[in-house]
Amino acid sequence: MSGPAGREPRRLTRWWRRRSLRTRLTVISATAIAVSVFLAFQVASELLDRELRGTVEEQLRADSRVLAADAERAGPARVRLPPYAGGGRLVRVVLPDGSVRTPAGQPPLPPVSEQAGRVARGLSADLMESDDSDEDGYLVFTLRAGDGAVQVARAADDTPVNRFGFGMLLIGLLCVAGGAVVGRAVARAGLTPIDRLTAAAVRVAHTRDLDAGIPDEGGGEIRRLIQSINEMLAALRDSRRAQRLLAEDAAHELKTPLTSLRLNVELLIRLDRRGTLDSALSAESRTRLLDDLGAQVAELGTLVAELTDLARGDVSDENTELLDLADVVGAAATRARSRVPDIEVALDVTSVWVSGRPAALERAVLNLIDNAGKWSPADRPVQVRLRAEGASAVLEVDDAGPGIDAADVPRVFDRFYRADSARALPGSGLGLSIVQRVVDAHGGRVTVARSARGGALLRVGLPAAAPPAPVARPTAGEDTTVA
Image 1: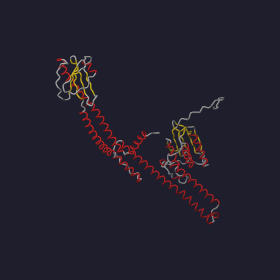
Image 2: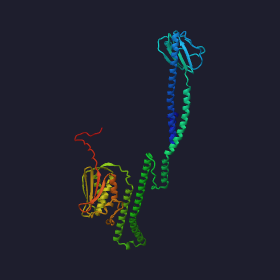
Image 3: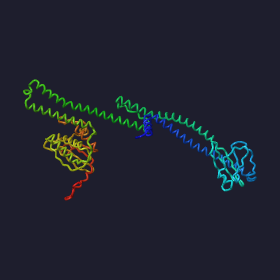
Image 4: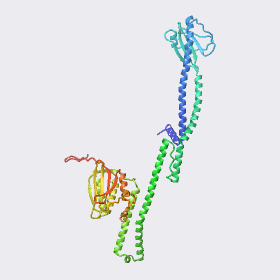
């Protein structure tokens, strides 16, 4: 459990996070100035104190040398000490026995220290010492003179340092207040592009107008942020346009089969209500009509599945895995034969490993085979070849049909595009578009050419992968029991 001491930092952190960016910048700038002024005060006070102390020490040495010269001529015990006239300087003569002589009327000095006594006895050199035992305190310099010593002292005066500190405090408060004002102004000026960016983003969110770009202004990080948001808006605009085109194309493509299906169903309902269904339609006509209805329903199912697959784009729950593309091609060929028994598929595949999504790749191969099966004559099979070429897995699907006109090649992978010669054939025009999307998602490329048999040759190249390491199998007689 965390006590009150642990809750305080969290409370302060929450308070800080709730502050606006302007407030944070203002507080940070004011704090930085306050810390700078405090450090400058500490350094300046220390330098001033040392300078004043050095000046006092030099004065004490000079005064002690004058007094020591008089004491050496007359002797420490007989040297004349004039009466104390006031002021900050105090003098004293220390005799070898430890007794002292002071001018008449002079305030008492602190007792002679042991080190000063050693100087008076000639056992030590001159001595500079400070006495902070009372409120005033003294700085005392002891100098050997004859058979004794002289001392000159001054009361420690902190008034200049205190005055300097008070001045620095006032300056610091003014600097902190000015820093807060300047920080607020700088934050307001620096965040103006952010405000405009926020207003533009809110306007886009409210109006749903993705064409309203955000003006590119400012520099550095602000400009990169604006450019990133404009790129995001452009991507959303393209996505919305693609969705609208897909919906419009889907509505157009669904209209024809739905109209045909509705007319046929209405015909059956009308004849059934009149009770003339058996007399109006022969058994052969009914069979043909029902077959037509079944084909239209199947075509609608295929179109809806392809629209769903295409609308999902690259979004897929399927995981990428290492797989043998030959197995995928074989499964797609089996599905193609079961869906359209008239399609004959001739396989010439070798094992090539790729990294990809099995279901998506199988759908792409199935679409290639279905497309080739529409054009290839019944007595000439669709040829499917798979081989490795360098670092690529190459899949080729060709048919013996009339081929693709040169004018149709640039648009053969467009959604819902169907050549004039393909209008009478079943299909939605989405199969090859799905193929290209799957191949692009796997880092490959799909191209169209003319096959040696005169038909279309669709060629898919995918990056090959290293096959998995073989699993070691136990040799004969080896114990494989797991304990």
